[in-house]
Image (cartoon, rainbow, N blue to C red; front, side, top):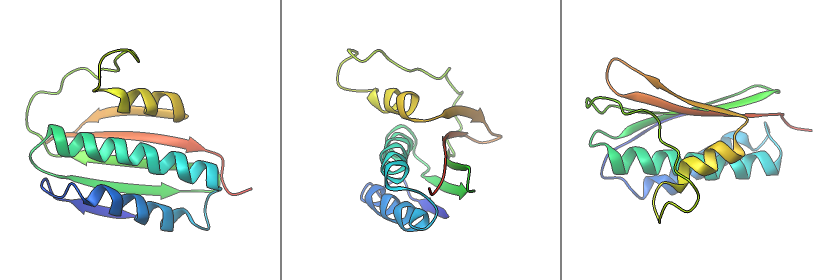
Length: 125
Protein backbone atom coordinates (compact mmCIF):
# COMPACT_ATOMS: atom_id res chain seq x y z
CA UNK A 1 0.00 0.00 0.00
CA UNK A 2 1.28 3.48 -0.83
CA UNK A 3 -0.56 6.76 -0.30
CA UNK A 4 0.49 10.40 -0.65
CA UNK A 5 -1.15 12.78 1.82
CA UNK A 6 -1.04 16.53 1.23
CA UNK A 7 -0.24 18.92 4.06
CA UNK A 8 -3.76 20.37 4.14
CA UNK A 9 -5.54 17.00 3.96
CA UNK A 10 -6.19 16.41 7.66
CA UNK A 11 -9.31 14.42 6.73
CA UNK A 12 -7.03 12.00 4.89
CA UNK A 13 -6.00 10.42 8.21
CA UNK A 14 -9.28 8.49 8.27
CA UNK A 15 -8.88 7.55 4.62
CA UNK A 16 -5.39 6.18 5.29
CA UNK A 17 -6.83 4.11 8.18
CA UNK A 18 -9.49 2.65 5.87
CA UNK A 19 -6.96 1.90 3.13
CA UNK A 20 -4.70 0.16 5.63
CA UNK A 21 -7.63 -1.86 7.01
CA UNK A 22 -8.54 -2.96 3.47
CA UNK A 23 -4.89 -3.78 2.70
CA UNK A 24 -4.72 -5.96 5.83
CA UNK A 25 -8.12 -7.62 5.43
CA UNK A 26 -6.70 -10.97 4.28
CA UNK A 27 -3.19 -10.48 5.64
CA UNK A 28 -3.71 -9.91 9.34
CA UNK A 29 -5.87 -10.69 12.34
CA UNK A 30 -8.26 -8.14 13.82
CA UNK A 31 -6.07 -7.24 16.80
CA UNK A 32 -3.02 -6.44 14.67
CA UNK A 33 -5.18 -4.52 12.18
CA UNK A 34 -6.69 -2.35 14.92
CA UNK A 35 -3.26 -1.62 16.40
CA UNK A 36 -1.91 -0.74 12.95
CA UNK A 37 -4.82 1.64 12.29
CA UNK A 38 -4.25 3.45 15.57
CA UNK A 39 -0.51 3.75 15.04
CA UNK A 40 -0.72 4.93 11.44
CA UNK A 41 -3.24 7.57 12.54
CA UNK A 42 -0.78 8.89 15.09
CA UNK A 43 2.17 8.99 12.70
CA UNK A 44 0.24 10.59 9.83
CA UNK A 45 -1.26 13.19 12.15
CA UNK A 46 2.21 14.03 13.49
CA UNK A 47 3.59 14.40 9.97
CA UNK A 48 0.76 16.71 8.93
CA UNK A 49 0.87 18.84 12.08
CA UNK A 50 4.64 19.21 12.33
CA UNK A 51 5.62 19.61 8.66
CA UNK A 52 4.42 21.70 5.75
CA UNK A 53 5.05 19.26 2.95
CA UNK A 54 2.67 16.35 3.44
CA UNK A 55 3.69 12.74 3.77
CA UNK A 56 3.84 9.39 2.01
CA UNK A 57 2.49 6.34 3.82
CA UNK A 58 3.79 2.91 2.80
CA UNK A 59 2.71 -0.43 4.23
CA UNK A 60 4.25 -3.81 3.47
CA UNK A 61 3.12 -7.12 4.90
CA UNK A 62 4.49 -10.63 5.02
CA UNK A 63 3.00 -13.52 6.96
CA UNK A 64 5.38 -12.70 9.82
CA UNK A 65 5.53 -8.89 9.81
CA UNK A 66 3.71 -5.68 9.00
CA UNK A 67 5.84 -2.58 8.44
CA UNK A 68 4.31 0.87 8.06
CA UNK A 69 6.41 3.90 7.15
CA UNK A 70 5.38 7.55 7.16
CA UNK A 71 7.82 9.74 5.27
CA UNK A 72 7.70 13.51 5.57
CA UNK A 73 9.65 16.02 3.53
CA UNK A 74 10.55 18.64 6.14
CA UNK A 75 13.90 20.22 5.39
CA UNK A 76 14.51 21.42 8.95
CA UNK A 77 17.20 19.83 11.10
CA UNK A 78 15.93 16.63 12.63
CA UNK A 79 15.54 16.68 16.39
CA UNK A 80 16.32 13.63 18.43
CA UNK A 81 13.20 11.44 18.70
CA UNK A 82 11.28 12.52 21.78
CA UNK A 83 8.92 10.22 23.61
CA UNK A 84 7.36 12.12 26.51
CA UNK A 85 6.16 10.65 29.76
CA UNK A 86 2.49 9.75 29.96
CA UNK A 87 1.82 12.76 32.20
CA UNK A 88 3.43 15.27 29.83
CA UNK A 89 0.29 17.32 29.12
CA UNK A 90 -2.07 16.81 26.22
CA UNK A 91 0.44 16.48 23.38
CA UNK A 92 2.99 13.87 22.49
CA UNK A 93 1.08 10.76 23.45
CA UNK A 94 1.19 9.36 19.91
CA UNK A 95 4.76 8.15 20.26
CA UNK A 96 3.91 6.66 23.65
CA UNK A 97 1.30 4.55 21.83
CA UNK A 98 3.79 3.62 19.15
CA UNK A 99 6.36 2.62 21.75
CA UNK A 100 3.75 0.62 23.70
CA UNK A 101 2.00 -1.20 20.85
CA UNK A 102 4.66 -1.68 18.17
CA UNK A 103 7.05 -4.62 18.24
CA UNK A 104 9.68 -2.29 16.76
CA UNK A 105 9.77 1.35 15.67
CA UNK A 106 12.22 4.04 14.75
CA UNK A 107 13.09 7.22 12.92
CA UNK A 108 15.43 7.35 9.92
CA UNK A 109 16.83 10.56 8.47
CA UNK A 110 16.46 10.96 4.72
CA UNK A 111 18.10 13.39 2.32
CA UNK A 112 14.96 15.48 2.65
CA UNK A 113 12.89 14.78 5.75
CA UNK A 114 12.58 11.58 7.71
CA UNK A 115 10.77 8.26 7.89
CA UNK A 116 9.02 7.24 11.08
CA UNK A 117 8.16 3.55 11.00
CA UNK A 118 6.69 0.78 13.09
CA UNK A 119 6.47 -2.98 12.81
CA UNK A 120 3.93 -5.43 14.17
CA UNK A 121 4.91 -9.09 14.20
CA UNK A 122 2.68 -12.07 13.65
CA UNK A 123 0.26 -12.54 10.85
CA UNK A 124 -3.00 -14.12 10.03
CA UNK A 125 -3.60 -17.09 12.35
